[in-house]
Amino acid sequence: MTTSLLRVPPPQGLLRPLAVPERLLLGPGPSNVPPRILAASGRQLLGHMHPEVLQVMDEIKAGIQYAFQTRNQLTLAISGTGHCAMEAALLNLLEHGDTVLVAVNGIWGQRAADIARRLGADVHELLKPPGEYFAPWDIEEGLARHKPSVLFITHGESSTGVLQPLEGLGELCHRHGCLLLVDAVASLGGAPIFMDQQEIDVLYSGSQKVLNAPPGSAPISFSKRAREKMLRRKTKPPSFYLDMSWLASYWGCDGEPRRGGRQEVPVSIRDLLPPLCPQGLESSWERHQANCTLLCQGLRDLGLELFVKEEARLPTITTVRVPEGYNWKEITAFLMDNHAIEIAGGLGPSAGKVLRIGLMGCNSTSGNVDRVLRALRDALGQLRRSRL
Ligand code: PMP
Image 1 (tube, rainbow, N blue to C red):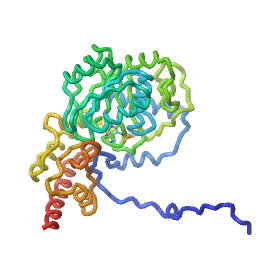
Image 2: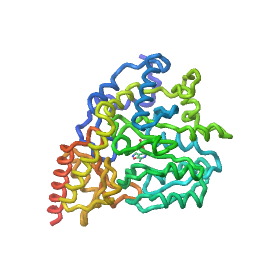
Image 3: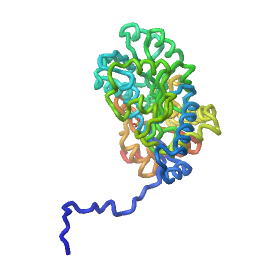
Image 4: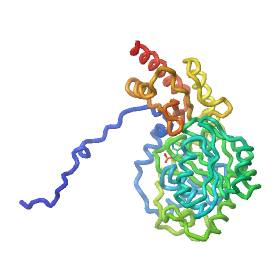
């Protein structure tokens, strides 16, 4: 018998079949994946330049154009999560020394500022406490003072539950010679956004929230103004994988023959977009709003205090203050252990202050609102009793 050269044994854990428990994911994402999308992931692969794949890519692009309400040619899906799209947007738009203004009212502005600093940009932050949003005059003052070439703002601040109004911001930015970059990872499909009408220059999202898919596909789109800024770059973007000129070519966005050999596209992401089509975006927005309203009423009936003022509540993720005398970790653990429901605590500036409840895509139903409210009532009762 030959002696094995292997010194590292095969991991025993990998030899056991994977058991995935049934859970209702009502945190800030990921959300549950419906059977139709699960089945799509089981399909056989095709080559990345096969005509069928190129056709699927065109269909994905049209789906994103619909979801974003844009006719931008440079529209595609990055193979990566929301963070990847955030980096792609910033590193393609910014060069060393460029001035960027970042609206920070939660963790996503903080992250964008961090990424921009790593790129060597001159970063200025416009600050608001968690739970608040920016008015046009806040933005105008920042634009006039810092004269940035890019403004970053988050549409759905998932760490605080705020929906940022976008009306007029694009026009304001353009009057000040600045591009508008918007993060819609937590809001796309759940709250209205109109990329072209609102003059947004770069918009991106993710797949594991309202689109109810596994993480790993991030829709992104660039306006003509944003493309022009990228064409004027003096230096190459500091990432090969995320260089938009290459990706634009592979996705057939530049009117030239496609160059392949880049990111492989999971064909299954084509299956994310149809749910937004037959029912329509508008009915998706209405459903998310209606179920959020129902949830907020139920939370108030439980004696809980909502964290965000009514006019700025994000319909996909609701934040409620951790009730006096309770530990948020005990509440989330109780829901998980006794009801198989995930909700989350705060994140970044909202950590320890709030509970976050997400109702996204197929999870946004009145049945799920009832389920989570019943589970919360149970948790508040039991946890209080255990202290008496
Ligand atoms: N932006 C926002 C507003 C988000 O909610 C998230 C994810 N929670 C991200 C960006 C990052 O996305 P991902 O987790 O897919 O990398």
